[in-house]
Amino acid sequence: MTATAHQPPQIARANGIDICYETFGDPAAPPLLLIMGLGGQMVIWYDEFCEQLANRGLRVIRFDNRDVGQSSKLHGGRRLTPFELLKLRFFNIPVAAPYKLLDMAKDTVGLMDALDIKSAHLVGASMGGMIAQEIAISFPHRVRSLTSIMSTTGNPRLPPPTREVAMLLMAPPPKTKDEYIRRFLRTWKVLRAGSFPEDEARDVALAERCFARGPSPAGVGRQLRAILASGSRKPRLHSVTAPTLVIHGKVDPLVHHAAGTDTAESIPNARLLMLDNMGHAIPTPTWPVIIDAIAEHAHGANAQAA
Image 1 (tube, helix red, strand yellow):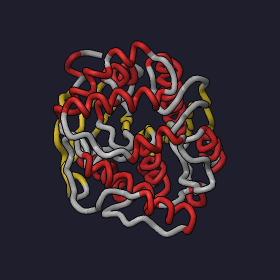
Image 2 (cartoon, rainbow, N blue to C red; image 1 turned 60 degrees about the vertical axis):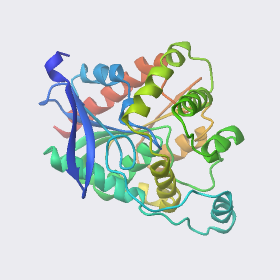
Image 3 (tube, rainbow, N blue to C red; image 1 turned 60 degrees about the horizontal axis):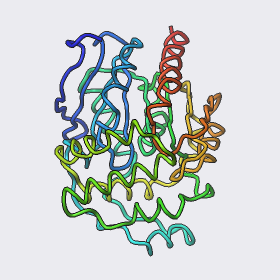
Image 4 (cartoon, helix red, strand yellow; image 1 turned 30 degrees about the vertical axis):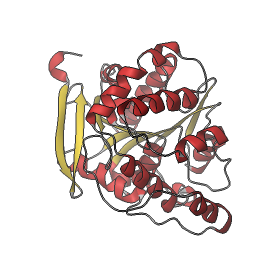
């Protein structure tokens, strides 16, 4: 990929808010949007990861979801309480939310409109996978292919997160930069569910980059409410027509690997790629397999549509 193929971050007006995005690769190549998960800024899709996908003949677009990074911050929604979670789990009493995943799906479609992209390959991780699923359900004509990574249908019968991860999610937000960096390192150590020295060595720099771009604890809380308020997509996923690839780790402590199986079984003709020793992250050792799978899936869908 040439230097001119990487465009620096820009702001687009989409669905009534500002979305910060960045592109890699040939502008004429098939577009592929990377949608990040809960509280994750677009830079969690590592630069090198994006570059390697772009080198496979794709125009890669990563962006900050609403309420994180340099995209618009919204308002409303108090911090989620354990009592609300108990009411949802045992009595099916909905969680109140300022917005839902469908609104975040409309953000993504709005970004595509702003970039004059009629349809794109969608790759979503965790909450990003949920958003991508929602787009495939609600805006099927905008989706060339769907890749859902370490995500879920929202089926309430699936196993919950481990206690350690649940406690991390419910912990009070950090108040200082040092606390933010320590929490960042601890969170990714737990989510990776293993030892990945190469990734751990660059966590401090990544944490500092995210902090400099603007942490938003209240925004993360609103995103979490959006997930919980949106319910299960499982019945509606049967209508998805986009070629679908589901990728999941067998040791995922946040979204149990049963959720990957459930997602693949819920979408007609979906292909499931289950990876050993992968938790709730995309560590560097998994890149060759995952990048190959995403690129082959996207180009296969292009060929099928031609």
